[in-house]
Image 1 (cartoon, rainbow, N blue to C red):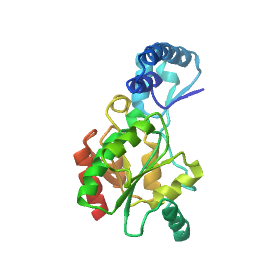
Image 2 (cartoon, one colour):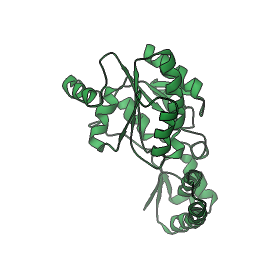
Image 3 (cartoon, one colour):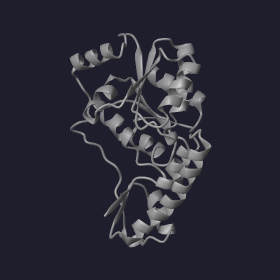
Image 4 (cartoon, rainbow, N blue to C red):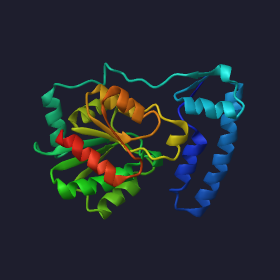
Length: 252
């Protein structure tokens, strides 16, 4: 049995665009081509393939994978772990550790800092929000290939005092960061996401903690927000619209 959460070759192509060394890009490009063939080769020989979106299933079937062995099982959330927290002592301790003062609003992103997450649009949105509303802290919870570039962008925009990069957080600690927030964000970009759709685990975790969500209107995201009435879907890759939606969510 094989579980497919995304098209690895598409993800690697996006990563390739962020490699500065020409030789590394060439080697990476060769790996992408090889992985694309290997991905399909393995899927053809597996008895059952679990996919998290219909888009991934369609991609595999279009590449010769038998539809009868493709099973759609969307992501879910551990509601024993991800739930609203009433423990103010724990949240106060986390606020103190992150140097968040009591009258500051908190906006949280949780996830792998990969190109398809669109965190750069959140950072640009944050700079727009802070110009209008000073007392907001943005927590970027996670690590990944984009972290250094995102930290550099934060400094370029003079946002290093308003944006906190927490680095990797143990999975069982993630609900604390979500529960600390006033708004949670998922600014997915179109590339990679729009073609396969999403079964967005982070959104399920945000919603399970009872937090309002602002996320890109990608297939699997916008419809989830509408069906669950848990937040606002915005145009992908639009920092101004993202900033307006976050500000509106903070007001309410």
